[in-house]
Amino acid sequence: MTHEPRRSSGLSPSSSLDDWQLHPRLLADSLPILEHDGLQFRLVNDRRFIWVLIVPMHPGAEQLHRLPPTLRESTLQALQAVSETLEQCYRPKRLNVGAIGNLVDQLHVHCVARTTDDPAWPGVVWGSGERQPLGPLESLARVRAIAAGLTTKLARHSES
Image (tube, rainbow, N blue to C red; front, side):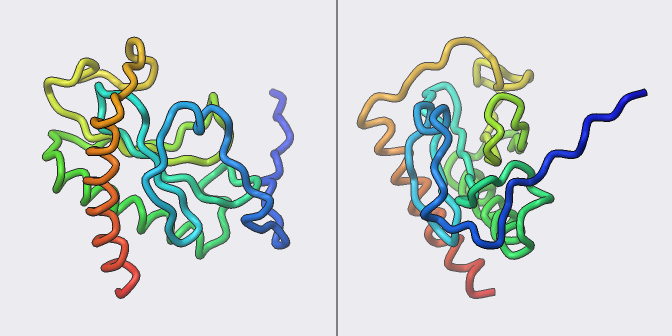
């Protein structure tokens, strides 16, 4: 049995936001919602699904468990805020959460509001059919609704 050497997390104490860049695929496939506490929140640009990404803005971040403790905690609090926001705004049957990283190694956490009438139900959304980009007004409406909910929830989490 052979073992691959453990990859470095790529994290450095001297890393700064100035060194961070969003992966080109995430940039191409999603729209910005807001930034908060070293995290970027993005809406996947696909009208078939309500799908939010949480991206820690830390150079070299690839694995949740390898983040600095404060950023890992912020990411988990952000996931709580996104989950609550999506439940409040869209009343999904289920919330699918994942940090896969097989195609894009930059750490990003998916939170997808699933309904029984979405085109991938009950299967997974990843790789399900052709992406259908949102129109300008539709994307604006989704971003505004999610941003409003997140702003309230993140402020509440920051106070506790």
